[in-house]
Image 1: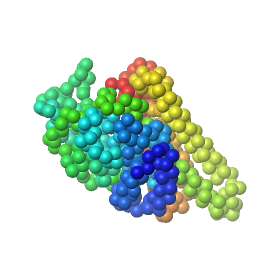
Image 2: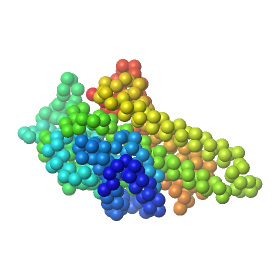
Image 3: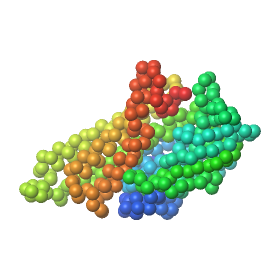
Image 4: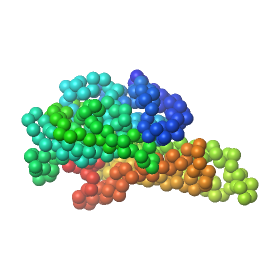
Length: 388
C-alpha cells in the first residue's frame, strides 16, 4: 500500500493510461472490473480519507482531490468510484474508535451509499430498526460497507431536537443490503450506482453517526463538508483528459472544405483557447479555495470560520462541475460528428459530464445555499456549510 501524498499521486498518474485503455469496457459493463478495484485497493486509494491519527496517510483535502483527478483523467467512473469508496476514512472520524476497529479492521475497505435521509430509522432498545430504499449507490457493486441516511422516528412520529427533525447516517455490511440493478444511465455508467434497500434491519446505536458530532477524529477532515471538498477532482480530471485529447487530435486535422490546418484556423484556435481559459480559471479557483480553507482550519472549526471562507469551496465546487460540462460540450462542437463515433472518448466524457451535473453538488440549491447563508436566510442544503 502506498503511503505518502506524492507516491499516491504518482501511482494514480501511472495507472491512468491503463484505465483509459479500458474506458469502453468499463462503460459497457456498468461497473468497475474486479481487478481495477483491487488495484486501487493495493495502491492505497481507499485508505486516503483516514487522518494520520486514525492510522491513515494524513493527506490534505487538496492532495486527495489531486489523486482522484489523476484517476478520472484515465476514466471518469473509476475516479468517481475511488472518491466515493475512499470516504470510509472520512466517516471513521465520526465513529467511536471501538466501532472503527469493529467495522474497519483494515484501512482499505470500500464504503458506498447515499447520505440523503431517504430512509426511516425507528428507535428501539440498543439502536434502530432501519427501513428504506436509496438511489445512487455509487461503488456498491464492489463495496465492503454501506452507509445510508435516514430520518429518526419515535414510534410513528419523526424525532426532533430543538424543533428540528433528526437525521442520522447508518453503517451496514454490504451483505446486509439488497442491491437492485437499476443503473442504466446516460453517463458515469461504470460507477454501478444502483439502488439498494433494507427492511427492518437492526442497526446498533454505535453504528450510526451524524456529521456534527466527531467521536474519534479531531482534525481538519472531521468536518461536515470534508467529503464534498474533494469532489471537483472528478470533472476536472476528465475535462483535462478531453482537452489533451482534442489538442492532440487537432495537430493532424484540417478543415474539410478548405484544407486549412486547424493550427491556422481561427475557429479551432479560439475554441481551444476559450476552453483552456475556462478550465484554468475553474481549477485555479478550486485549488485556491481548498488551500485557503485548510489554512483557516489551523485555528478554527469549520462552523467558526468567516462566511466568505465557508462558501468559497461550495461555490468553486459547483462552478467547476458546470464549467467542465461547458468545456466538454464545446470541444464536441469543435470536433463535430467525429466526436460521437467510437473509439472517440468524447462521447463518454460528454455523457459523464451531463450525468455529473445532475448531482446535487452542481444544482442551483448550492448557489442558493451560499446566498441565503450570506444574507441570514434559510439555506436549501445547509450541510455543506456546517449549518444544522
